[in-house]
Length: 64
Image 1 (cartoon, one colour):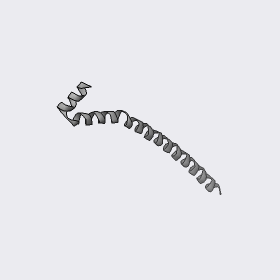
Image 2 (cartoon, helix red, strand yellow):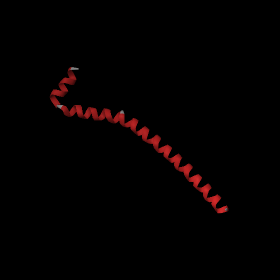
Image 3 (cartoon, rainbow, N blue to C red):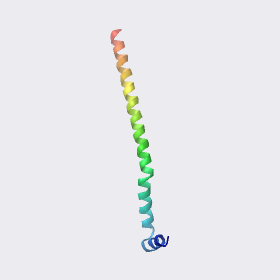
Image 4 (tube, one colour):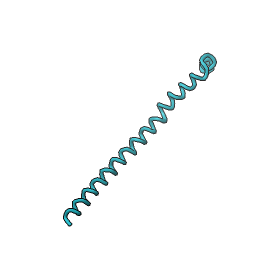
């Protein structure tokens, strides 16, 4: 604890900001990246289903 106080008094608030950014990047951003990857996978599967339904609709229109 004394080391932390000495760092703050010697180097100022910049150390705190850098430490927070490192923490934020290693925790919150990883969770956000996982969420965005899941959303991307779901959108890809929805797009594939829509494309297959559109192709089936085109085939049935051609036979009429």
